[in-house]
Length: 432
Image 1 (cartoon, rainbow, N blue to C red):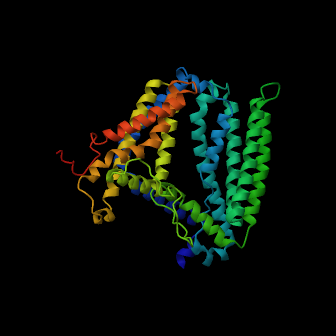
Image 2 (image 1 turned 120 degrees about the vertical axis):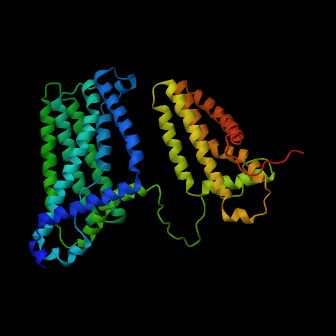
Image 3 (image 1 turned 90 degrees about the vertical axis):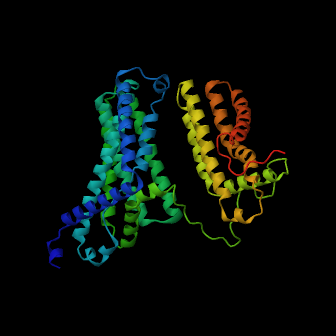
């Protein structure tokens, strides 16, 4: 009791901020190996620093100079909507103590708002610093224009955080999604309209006028939203729920690819939406072909297809974005080797299942099914990546179908060569 009488809102906030910081640091330590991160981080910082210096002092690539100005507000909007919200440092146990001290709750909320705004300001400043070479050398913006852009984007972030906090406390379900979509769309439209007005402010209008008008509107909107949020009472459970969502945001982000969301049970049972009917994938009716079909159907009916699609889309961007043909070819070859190794591991996991040990399979069947299984698994991704490579190296549209045909041939070749790469296991069939 004596410690509680000595406790103040400032001390309580400091202690909880320190606990949250240690919690996030513990999550990062548990997720990443610091030694490996150190070996990768130092070269990455050196290479990134050298590339950033080149953006200021050396000639810019042609594709970078051809980017339109709306690229800047679009990148900033994506950052604003994905960089987190407000944390008020309220916990569920506070209902027994802090509800009797409303001034303490207000003090915690004010300090939480200031701390969250400071963190977002640093993150936004880092993003603006990365974009500075593009804004100065390509769009001809001076430092006053960049400062105005930062101020307006920061004010828009404050408004976005207050909207997110209010809607998270007041609404749930489809109403929350609908109102949040409408509010974010209106904010994005206003920010885009201001960016277009500011870009055209060089013709007779002072550039600071656009920033001043936008800051005035956003400040009034933020004041109204903040007043409404701090006047809100009687929704302590919803406030704690929103606080837990912000608190566990980093953990959820790190574990999103490792932990699957539990599926709701259905009355008729869950049915796969791929390969609903027993259709043949190959013309052959040999045992190895039928086993390869079962392996491919099990792969795409499970959850692995999500990572397969993500790798394909990421590889598509990695092939198309680099401007140099040699880099495109190197990335393409590296993606093929990565896919080959990853799919080979899934094929081995398929044969390691307990059900496969029960089935009366021939000893050489796993080895014989390697080529057709790997061909079918590689086919969709290799066709997409090869078509993208053809479109990048040979711009006419006819290169896309030509690349797709080459992708089919390359997938067949890689499937047959998977045995030579050491991805086939099992006993080799005896000749004679």
